[in-house]
Image 1: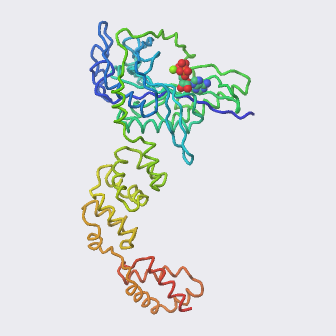
Image 2: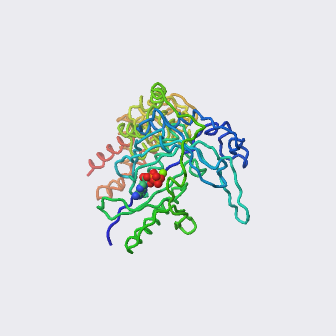
Image 3: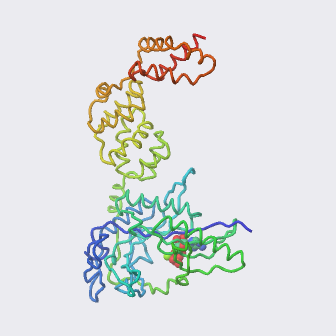
Amino acid sequence: MANYETVIGLETHVQLATESKAFCADRNAFGADPNHQVSELSLGYPGTLPFLNERQVEFAVKLGLALGCQISRRSTFDRKNYFYADLPKGYQITQDEHPICIGGHLPIRLDGATGRSIKLHHIHMEEDAGKSIHAAGDPHSQVDLNRAGTPLLEIVTEPDLRSAEEVDAFMSGMRQLVRWLGISDGNMEEGSLRCDVNISVRPEGSAEYGTRCEIKNMNSMRFARRAIAYEVDRQIALVEDGQEVTQQTRQFDPESGTTSALRDKENAHDYRYFPDPDLPPVVLTEDYITQLRESLGILPWEAYKELVALGVEADEAALIGEDRQRFETFRRYAAVSPAPAELAKLWVNRVLPNTRDAEPALAPDQFSALQGLIRDGKVSAANAASRLLPDLLERPGDPAGRAEQLGLIQNTDSGFLESIAREVVTANPDKVAAYRKGKKGLIGFFMGEVMKKSKGSAEPKETQSLLREMLAETE
Ligand code: ADP
Ligand code: MG
């Protein structure tokens, strides 16, 4: 059997977090009672006229700039006509001919590998349809039009992805980016982020793409992975059997883990696209675009790089750099930290679980003082993490003073350490003999005794090297 390469292109839909809908003032929010966010405009009554939500344009341009797209100075709206119960106007307002963003790419990060960039074809603005509800046991289908007219961006990639893992990384990256930019909550469970997955296979080394199938409306990465795996196997089996893949729109059934044909692929002319006569072109000035470009700030992949350059480990960099506010907070602390990489560990293990992304009670300079205590051996790293820091996060104050109060200051005074170590060695001649015969594990016993006598204040590194010297000396 030949080896096959999987080729995937995504059409990702992002619901925008605007106050109102794309072309009218009805509220845009998830979870309201069915059909409670629907004026005559959402219902598509004859005689109503759409007017464009400025915010949708702003969000589209922001996303386009972040992704390195070319921003169209003039874009237009078209009508995509089809008949369905959840589409009250009988057409969807979309951008077919002249979308708002062209090209661009999303950098993705795969486990253990250096990242790569997925090429985009374009991004266009459109509106969502309502929702048909087919409840079990109900002979009728119900229609909820709250979602009709919700502003969407559709991000269309080139056929540039090669595996389910890359799809996963792309969707995670997109979710992170739309949240980072504040343009969507990116919530896949609630349908704010979903994608159509176009899949084909071809023999490895082949220059031409195979015929693709499109799996509609994946709103869970777990399902998307299963759907892709099934579809790849199905297509390879067809090709191996000498049959042809038919270009189709398919749906995934989570129960059986299989995909099945919904309809043979429709062509653009089936939708009778034509320019929407009710909406003028969107014309953007250079000033407008410049202003939005300047408002972008640092982007997620730049934040990640910055963290790695500080010496932060990959997993920690991913976690701290996941959210913009989280990153910005960490950045202010790292700027005055004597050891940003160690700060990142404390941040991930101790600070984030405590603050849940709120501003830590401990100020940046106090935090760096705490790290100074660890570096100088005044407080052990373990005690600093498990006792001093949690205490300071509860009741902020001077770290050195607090360490004193909590009895966490370690003694590095060599005279003090030597006298205790000598006492312990003298009091345990049998253990010393055993150590000398090779039971080197007894170092733990001696350490424990010194710790007891010093009430835990002996600095461990210093103590251990002292003990080893003394024990060798008696040989
Ligand atoms: P249509 O015009 O029929 O919607 P497009 O050319 O716009 O088709 O492509 C839709 C999506 O399908 C894009 O994401 C694109 O990357 C992807 N795609 C196109 N050809 C293939 C292919 N042979 N295999 C996998 N994906 C493909
Ligand atoms: Mg398309």
